[in-house]
Image (cartoon, rainbow, N blue to C red):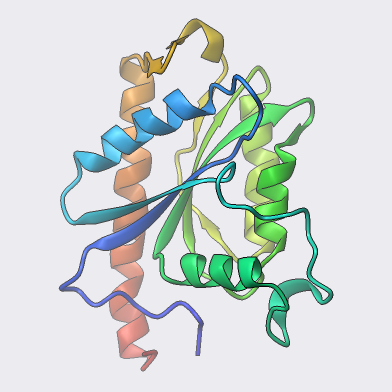
Length: 200
């Protein structure tokens, strides 16, 4: 039995929106708020907004990786429960050089089975956002997650951010709307299959 049970059709889809930067002056916040606004326009969705700056996850301090025998620390157990309770995840993640944010890597590495089967959307930003999308997709798929398409890759971020406002032009808005739509539809397509197979 998967740790991620199928969603009862009578309750909203629970989407975790992860703000994946803790850097001072981060521009991830206005982008994440912009994505949050898009999600807020979609019916039958509950949003769990996760700011990794507030989550208090020290760099991996579990004595055994992945929680195969349970978690030693309260913050690990809380993170496990929070991820388990969500149906799908959207990461808002910056490109740092040729990689992605170490706090995103850390949040991923705390858990294993909790990520398996999760549908995930990606919003990446920075000069190398497109390459980051590919690398992050590979890491998420290695965790057993299912990356939906399209991904939102924003390469001209600084030109679009003014304070706490993000200017998502028409094409970016359309791509984000498609990503959210495909995320919902992919979940709805597999739910009857899970029920048919007797997964509860």
